[in-house]
Length: 469
Ligand code: BGP
Image (cartoon, rainbow, N blue to C red; front, side, top):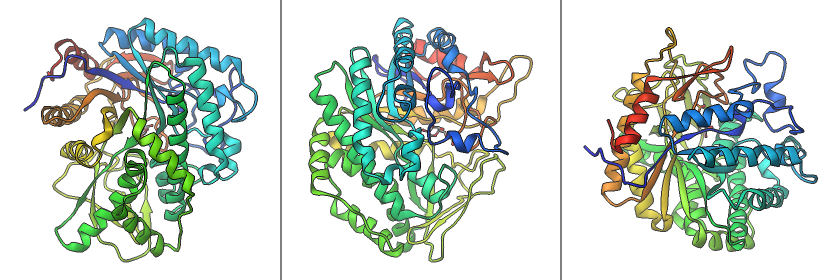
């Protein structure tokens, strides 16, 4: 097995503004897509105070420093900078991120900053969300403000976090706002529009001659055919085209491959949809594909696909009651349980070789990727807190298995330069709440105290030895 990390490897921890900051009404922040939904009567949980990172970031960065974490993914909340999404800048928002970024640098924890991590400004969300092309230029305007204010110190920028999760969860599975289901045509359309926004932001950044890199964070779910029957293999290809290839093609090929489009068109036809694009979109794609500096890859799980002829059906397991998930899409396929593969309590198959397969496919099919950062990977687990101690051995095992496959890919020539565990400290899980924990540091949500888990001590040792321990 592969144990040794490259000398300059980043051992990071990941967060996202909405999941850690809390303080959603402080210092002039405007509402985002999630606020109304989270604050509705009867809501199971809210984003206040989450992990109170808005006030406790110094403590979290001190802990990062002390435990060998030398990189942190943060995201900027668009509505702290522009409370209405556009128009007047909120100086308190600029000040907050300046202080946060400076503190990261002071502690030797390099910031990797995402511009959009699911938290679209509420007025835009209510006005068509990413189906509305007006958002493209509003996003680029917001990106410009961030580049101008923080671009002298931030050396790693991502335009979007997981642009697949926004339509998949919001328009197909129904567990993200606006809770629509089975609308594959809208999902595909909004991915295209987000890719135009991404490309324009990359092209803008590159024209500004700032001293850093820019890329995007994609979630690259593995797709595996349940059997070698042609119809199951085809279901895998359809799901893979929609979830992975469509946007990878846009980002790295500068347009959609014919084979990808044939699969996408098949999904659109079976669901009475159509994709609208403009020639200038592809000009932006081409320019950005030549200039993009890196791919951020999030990987948690793979799906096992079977052909599915019927209507769409989904049940989201958002409580951690193992074995309750259902996921079948008309014109695509069904994700089924593979009894030979273990799962988390939320029914996510634990399949580390799927991460290796995705790394190899990037190197093969998108050889201009330049650098890959594993921008998220980790295990949702119901940690037991006993006398201030948290033994999260299953998480250590999960991460070890994935790291071994990353290092195998590195040994075979894939250029992976860092790993950001999801998550640095326990955070709000968008559709699951607070019992699904991922952190190296346990957060007691009663008093916001932090406690290093067994995995934090293990991570520290690994960063010191630069090898899997
Ligand atoms: C990714 C997101 C993160 C995070 C993670 C874990 O999709 O980028 O924000 O939430 O998944 O997912 P969950 O919280 O649903 O378990």
